[in-house]
Image (cartoon, rainbow, N blue to C red; front, side, top):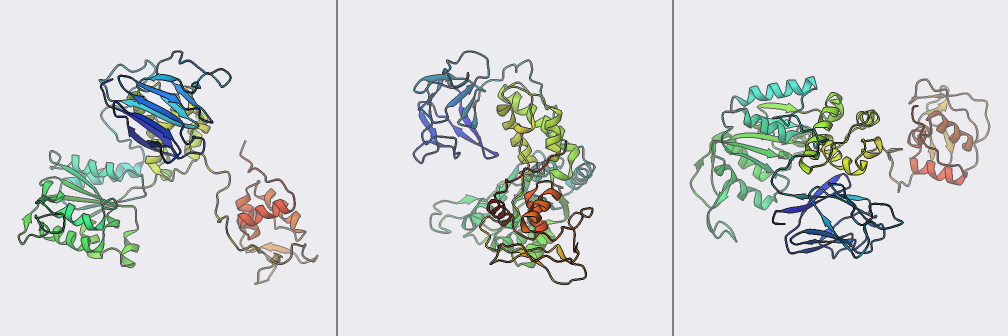
Length: 490
């Protein structure tokens, strides 16, 4: 095989590409001495070896959880009896081809080979033509319309939004719709370059300007003449560099480090950040005058959870594009999977959705995508730390009628039930308006009643009782009560 190959490993909702140089034998596993490290408990320290020569072969090293092979084209791969029809026999080599999927323990990995395009599988549908944009949400359409109108001038644009919402794509769209479209589009991640190198990267330097400057270097701003500079994560830029960038915005001139002369630059600036810049200014971490220079047109991209009409078309686009590129059949999205995607909050936004659609075909094993192949909403969200030291049942929601003080359900030093009283109790600030007040009974009964009221959700029950979730779990264990499952709607 003479083409370039790489192994794409999907673990912990992210993907990492590892090149496979010809003539190498690369060990894969969880240990510290392997060539490709896969940090997952299902992976052995030295799990398998990938041999890269005229062909690419995989050899399981007797791993604890085994290695499974899902070939892109159907055929007998020489299976191991007693462990299922996909497990490889240890110490035996198996041929890998483009698009083949390995399951290393429970971690999927894809072999990608840079080769001439071939006709995809008949069941593979091509992605939508001529666009990476899916604009179904009215706010997103308005946003892109404003961005394209701003692109006609050279006014600076500041794009704000959570990580993964698509700030880079919007910045590229501004560039391609401007008169600078034929020139360079430079993306610079301000958080990825150290403070000591950022200034040299932006402005360049003369020979001898500092230790190690053995030759003159043209900076990125100077090399992007006539084009667009996209300053990603601008909120991470050091204050000293912010001052010099402000001068560039005002004068359109730069000075290389170690030089006494200035150079005129003609670039258009687009910046992006996931930080609240106004709070950063108030905290003294960002210059207010630079903010006003960069935010000629401020654009705020809403998170994916606020754009539900775009979740399904984006998912289908990513799924189809990835499967076509990898020469895999495109699995169907079941109605249950679509409902699960709409219910999921997508904290990683579009980037997380894209990664989920690249991972799901491996998990579905060629069948339709189901909810279990997608990111899951935690059964109980961890609102409290497991090492929390507070262990007092002082409910902020339960108090005698007309009382101004909280009433302890259980003191810190005693786990006995409180004395009986005929005093009626009412909810001071009920989290569930229609729920009746908890009666003043034994602690065990109080816990059971709170769990019943909250449908088995331990986090909500703990909040209702005024304790941490860990404290509630400890009480369940002390009273030998089973930890309930949160009831799901039928």
